[in-house]
Length: 476
Ligand code: ADP
Image 1 (spheres, rainbow, N blue to C red):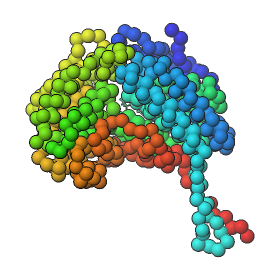
Image 2: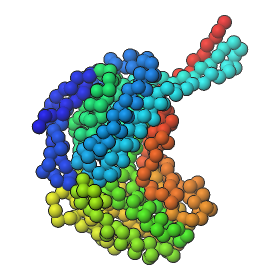
Image 3: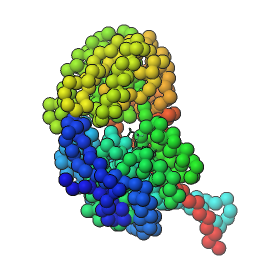
Image 4: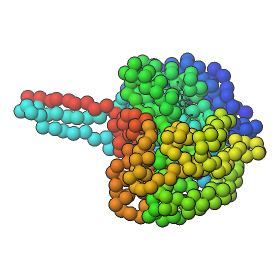
């Protein structure tokens, strides 16, 4: 099997060693072999990106738009094969994987348009005869660091705006999912991306990440990953004065009020908690349910959860694929044990007796919000159910978390929906919709421990990927 290489300065380069990408549904199946780099590759990639910057920053926006549009077209045209690759390396179902691929294609096309819409302001000066211009300029070399759970969409929503606004890129994908990252590099290369404008360096986060974050020629870092890694990375970026954007965990609440439509609530929670095997930072992991609907809701959700078809993601009948890795599975099973120890009633959650990292979806009933299972991000198919008395208590419990990415409410009351939308401490709020599953053309991001820096996606992406310049011009 050929080794898929790094892309540095427009050339495919070997890494220091090779790593195998394994299918979590069948861990003896090798999806591909990929370069595993050392810090020399980071230095070479940053040097190539720095050299390419002037040319790319000053290129016609039409060139940038055409490149991104062409990549988007290729992704959409090849969505079935790409989706299959994604499902094999990450483990989400084929339908979810194709959906994610389509979203990546749309992201490239959206930012192709945005490349042509970089605007500024002409402002009257307080001094006669002077004009003030406020314009946006690219940052320089940006480092993009991504996790494994959306191996094509998250890279797309960082790479496309970075390039659209004239930056050059060094991209470091997650170790678990190099295949989609390499595929994106190949498409960019084949669509005519100039050498050095986009560089791919694959390898271990603990080696590549710090080298990229500390490099003096990298101007900005956009990171999506865990809280712990984000905390260290933020310190390094502060030390080396880099612009930083981070998206990290969530412990997203979904409130179900007595006045909710029961079917809507059950389907919303089933989707939010268990689809994509719960491996979404926007997953609904705390179901906060009012006492009057609680028992009916739990019965109906339990039935639907237990009926979910768990299995090989490439099987069209399957609704939930495997957990992404052995270590992730071990972590999930640890939380199932903890749920019992903390006094919750555990339904499901066992490891499946078959090859692959399969686990039954789990509900933790009778949970209280101060339990660790309700405060720590599990990142698996596990949701706690917390019973509350009224709307005010539901809102207080929903906001009682150090995270603040997404939140939701199921209700037929306009007053409750409005109050929740206004008073939720999350960056994204859903009414009668799952906490996970967002559009590609509007801002994505959270508050508190979930996010740091400017928002990603939509028009708001310009805030992170450009720097503002204020120019004063005396025409006399
Ligand atoms: P996840 O487990 O969700 O992928 P991580 O925070 O472990 O979350 O990883 C997110 C990304 O950060 C991955 O690409 C990983 O390789 C990278 N990474 C890991 N350690 C570091 C580090 N010390 N500095 C920068 N990036 C890192």
